[in-house]
Image (tube, rainbow over all chains, first blue to last red; front, side, top):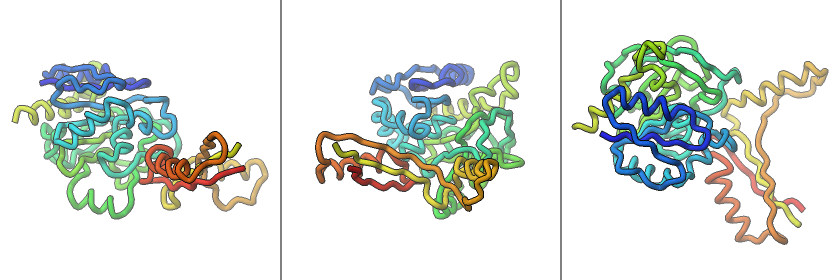
Amino acid sequence: MKIGVVTFPGTLDDRDAARAVRYAGGEAVALWHDDADLKGVDAVILPGGFSYGDYLRCGAISRFSPVMEPLIAAAKGGMPLLGICNGFQVLAEAHLIPGALTRNHELHFLCRDQKLTIENTDTAWTSSYSKGQEILIPLKNGEGAYMCDDETLAMLEGEGRIIARYVGENPNGSRNLIAGITNERGNIVGLMPHPEHAIDSLTGPSADGLGFFTSVLKAMVK
Amino acid sequence: MAKIVVDVMLKPEILDPQGKAVAAALPRLGFTFATDVRQGKRFEITVDGEPTAAQLAEVEIAAEKLLSNPVIENYVVRVEK
């Protein structure tokens, strides 16, 4: 099973994302932003970082990179796609998921280990978890406040499309403590915290993040 | 030479932490006039000669697609002499 990891100029977490794929038992394939070629992968991860220096808006310029055209088409066709942190911002800018990510409400850049609850285990990226499971993974961002209008929020809540919520105090001002959401079909997931940094307790706060990567490998076998 | 100016502002219902930080800093300098501050972006686009209607129409599309995110922002396009 081949999982592509896209590198944009300014991406930071592509190596950890590729490592997480290998830990889960998949083959990680490096994809380049300027190359409109998905190299025959079965799923794609848009990793975290500061693509294009966060210029204009986070993810706004990456969203128009050459690789995005085949990627958007494949994801609309059902290919699993996970956007982590800056990748979540790219998904929002590409309107593959509703809403937008804005500046943390206290303006601080956050970097800490964060508890989440997994709320939807029916997506391509969350089936390894149990509903309501609490996990601990790093959260590190400056623009992680999930915003959408009331109608969209009601739709996300009503359709169970919030896949993960922050536990405890709201770290960044996200509406309804949203840490991650999915599209209607459940193949595209955007997540602000970083599961790829928590796949082994030797190098992360836990191994709780590995489930995102084992989930997609399971989803592709089906 | 004319400039096409695009002003992009967060929609009124979207929280603007940067504007709030500026609003909180003003009284520290002794300025007490502000009841609220919102911070936005201004793009100045230079074209050859007077902007044509077709160019302005294209700028509108660019403003919608790239310069703003219509989920959270509004924009205004105008010509400045």
